[in-house]
Figure: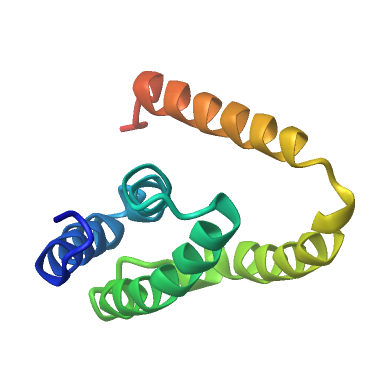
Length: 122
């Protein structure tokens, strides 16, 4: 039942919507793929990247059209993010998977705590 086409379309729509809002639909997509559909984590990561690219492109284009994306401010982060993603993709076979999982967990925890206690400057 959960592997049927209507459920896949519904999940794609919901997770695409959340991704467009910046909620983190990709992380939820990995959970869906691994916990519900039983895919191995390595395959789920690949499908997450494939899912994320069009979602990110479309939502970024809308943000640019709305003039709510300060491109000059985020350009250095975009370039460095691409360089580091490529470098660490090449290095990933040499890094212990458990260390990556723990590091990602700490990053999510710190980010979540920051979001809870963050106060916007007036």
